[in-house]
Length: 384
Image (tube, rainbow, N blue to C red; front, side, top):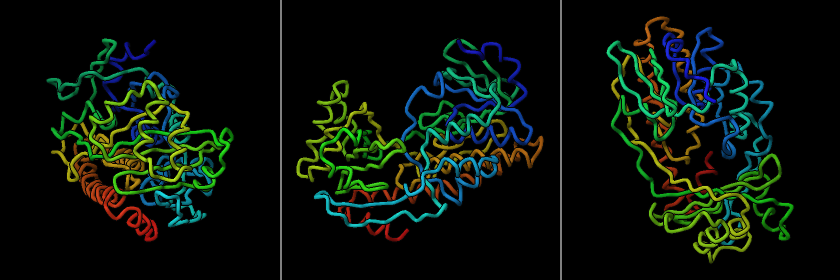
């Protein structure tokens, strides 16, 4: 049962956040410890409704700053995975071209996305998040607020509306006509139980951290999870329509179809695809325009992927979302009742930082899948 049907009036006086991802949760947390109430409306029915993806490296210059502002930095360090930042680049024949051991530093520690999200959720009062609340329509009202309509028929009016609702944000059209565009690459999630494999060469090739087997237009990326399983992605540069010809409802057959695209690769690499025992989730990679911006308004803004969706090849998406959430909360605190001034300051800073990282992400995408891969990828990681 949804618990927000009674909320039409009570939510009028505080901030409404759409989406309980890392950015929306960080915003709510920093507001909470600053004595400002907010409510998050999340479409998923519960925190456990779906897998939360793999590892994130949280950077000292943005993501970690956001977690410090949220008062969660020490708790975050306690759930990081030492040694997981090791990087290995191999070619299609399984030859190791770069083997970069863990730095042992906390500049970019790895953490499981699900564990980090749980930390943020548990740091909030229980009534902050309304689960199972799918936003279907948002429209400006005559008094300067926004009227939110949910799938179950409930309505809420928001004085300040924050779209933290990802790539296909329902809030973004209030500010921008921009739409995400396919970057040409699709990921298919893979995973397998190492202990069930007779061929130990598979786990040996992956190593202790993240392995990237790369060639022009395709890649296999895998890492060890905290439970000892191998998780990762197959990446292919193919038209979106190509994937619609594969029946992913029959996982074994679908993965054989995908593996055929890697027919001349080393057997331990192909085994990562053929022996994957998780549901093959297909993730087409989209991005918003690199210079995406909007005209600042005093009652609505965006953060995270809703504001600056980019490919994952700079590793900045989650970091920027966390940082956005903290920066927006701190701007609201600094400007007191002048929400318009807070949003103008926040938006302008967001445009500058997101453009820089979107450019880097687009460049790295070409490095990963261009004609010089995998040597281009070796050069990239050698320079970090």
